[in-house]
Length: 463
Image (tube, one colour):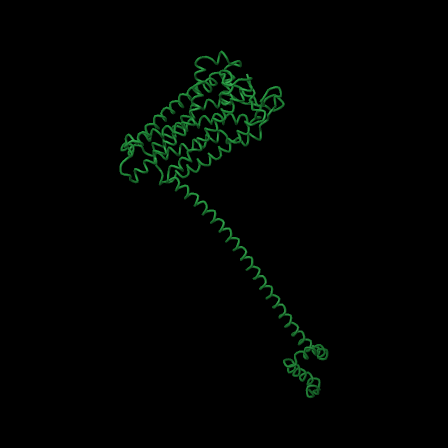
């Protein structure tokens, strides 16, 4: 059996605006986690605790990316149909293949969020062990073991969520509006991907929250007792800051996870008691598919069927329940973003490293700008030198041409005198007049020679 992939929003489409706010917060969270991860890679800060924090930053980055990272793309593809006969109700959907992309991202959001709370729990346990057994922790808890823990948590979460990616397949629907339809692959895979996985998720989140709560209480107790009192040294001061940092991370994570844990526990109770099979009008298959594809929508409908918190029609109550479900998602993303704020406020080393990083970035930008200016100035100077060289070469060429022309004119005049004495006298008369001092003697001598040949010599004698 196939089902159409659609979801309901309010008439004013405020829920779509909530999605927009979600991707803005997600991009801020992703940027902050990238900065934290890059700074913690420095050798001066490398330790088992910082390696766990690096794994937490990577998990939070991937959680924010899979939740709302592709929402700008989806916002341009949403198609909404107004239901005029229903109050506060619009049906929206994503066309194929965007619906398939949204399905896999929904599965990945659970996967990476599981890694996030597992690493956070491990961070609290590591700090408790460091307080109880400081010498053992110093020599036995190495960077390699911390890295193995992070990789192991990623592999564990991915391995238990892989079947969810293959629980349904999508295709373009037969309707003219290009609505996407999806089909369950098999009862066994579908049952694990929805029911058993949700139970496993509930057990993991509940146990991690309990461990984090006990760790937070114990660390806070040791912080307020004589454990950290006495003569204040630099090492003791750093230890106190580290403990406060871990406490803040655990408290914020508990505040963001408790609403989701309560919802998980309520769902498990309703399923174990058999209320789903007796009250669900469309069968367990549909509810199972929606738990995989659109968890928030499925839980909103389940709250409509099994609670009487809000009065009114089913559609109205569904839209009302949808808002707190999306708020829980936004709180999760804010929790992913909060680690950066906690690190910045509680760790002086982190603040110094962040300030140093931004200074290097500013210096690099200034260096690039100055290099560009110097390059532009050099190019301009080279162009001016080339133009001057061209002018000099041009002037020299003109001068050489003029000088060659003058020499050629003088040679032509002498040549014409030697060949045609009489016309030569006429042709060179003006030149003799223009150069009386230089040319007179030479021309007279030549005239005497010619006249001696002809038998006359009066002209030069008279002159």
